[in-house]
Length: 326
Ligand SMILES: NC(=O)c1ccc[n+]([C@@H]2O[C@H](COP(=O)([O-])OP(=O)(O)OC[C@H]3O[C@@H](n4cnc5c(N)ncnc54)[C@H](O)[C@@H]3O)[C@@H](O)[C@H]2O)c1
Image 1 (cartoon, rainbow, N blue to C red):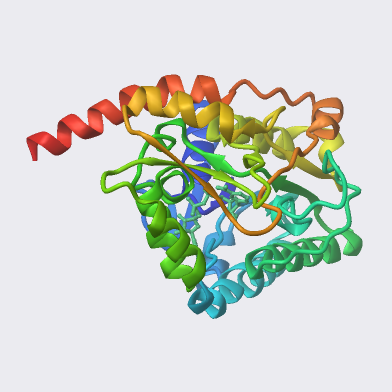
Image 2: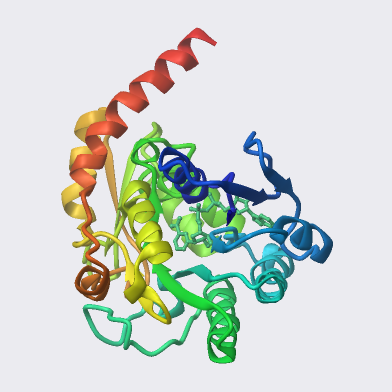
């Protein structure tokens, strides 16, 4: 029996579906129900709920976490991601679990302030966001259990991940603020970044638009956006592959996407104009190597952002049609 935490989340849902299609028995664990026959609805920091979820479990895929960059969410995030991971690991060790796979993040380096490119697993771990710190502390807890030698552990440093259908959705958690101006203004207001919000508001042309983010020198942002299905493939390799044991792997797409390439393609599909904004600072510009997981576990990324857009466009049309009907 495999326990999947975060089973109602983006990656968790897809991992659960993949495991079920392989006929494997799984139990979900999340704050929210995902309608699974076998699931525990509870919080990772609730030792009783975790003990209940862990009973009879052989392997754990720990994908549940609270992702937030809002200062007011910090307490809740450390409780879920650090204390929750500690409790889960201890319960797994007590249960005699075989393998424990942990979803970490590229924010442990962090990728948006790299010391060298491409970012490999050897890059120093110096997170600058509280979220990245919670993931580094989670990794340390996993390494502690790895040293104790009772469980096989695997750390996957996840790329930024989205469902293809989210890419052209201005209401989506990531793509909304990343590629659409007005959602980005609202996001920056929520973060308390008054000066940035002001700069973005000044760029508003009085109608909804995309935003092409560049740094203070006019260099467009560049980063990885990995499709959830590629992440699922990597998670399954981490669960099953003998060579994964004790390893730490970057997991994500082969190549980063340059916003100067992708935003015009988005604009063609949405028919929204593009507003270019030069933001203070060095901006986002990275390339993370997935060579280790390709070489060691045979991982292969199947999705490019262009391929994701071919799914995102019909998904957007369906959403807009449903909105018109409502
Ligand atoms: N999506 C990304 O870009 C990205 C990037 C790097 C790392 N990650 C990590 O990958 C994992 C999966 O990400 P995702 O995109 O599926 O995120 P998601 O937010 O869609 O899913 C996370 C799930 O965890 C659950 N959760 C949150 N707090 C909980 C708690 N206290 N107890 C139990 N469940 C709780 C949420 O309800 C949610 O269903 C997470 O650990 C995340 O930190 C994601």
